[in-house]
Image (tube, rainbow, N blue to C red; front, side, top):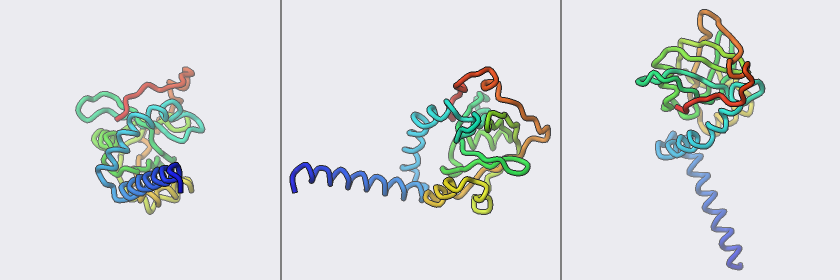
Amino acid sequence: MGWLAGVALGVVGVLGALIAVFLVGMRTQNRFVQNGVFWFSKRVVNPRNMATAGKPGAYAAIIRAPGRTSGRMYATPVGAVAVDGGFLVSLPYGSRPNWLRNVLAAGRATLVLEGVEHEVDAPEVIPVGPVIHHFAPADQQLFRVFAVREALRLRAAASGEMRVSAALAQGETRVPAAVA
């Protein structure tokens, strides 16, 4: 075996080990692994997702809620589906994310899904098992691989208010937001 093949084999071995650490870390909700994923999501994934989140056909919705101490409005891309009387949001990181703690503390939020803003309230973290069938088959598969255990149930607010997102109505391609 030449030196180039040895280097290639070493690189493949290191990548395999990193993937194994990532999978095991996510499945066991290891803080070290999750903190790395949080950092990457906050700095790389979420800003890119915010460019299309909440728009018709987009994979991600947007959830907006006031900060627990600042009161500042934060927006974060999330995986959400509509269900009778409300919405379900997947929680791949469990109940640790700031956006989730903000929603729970406020008891309300705005969810932008498919270009429509929905006022929601009564947030409740529930086991994902009984409601997993509401999510797309590809999402269900990922939930199993990464051992996603929880979802956030949101009730459509009593006013039933729905409106076309102001940003979308004005033709904006990007919704300004801070990532919580």
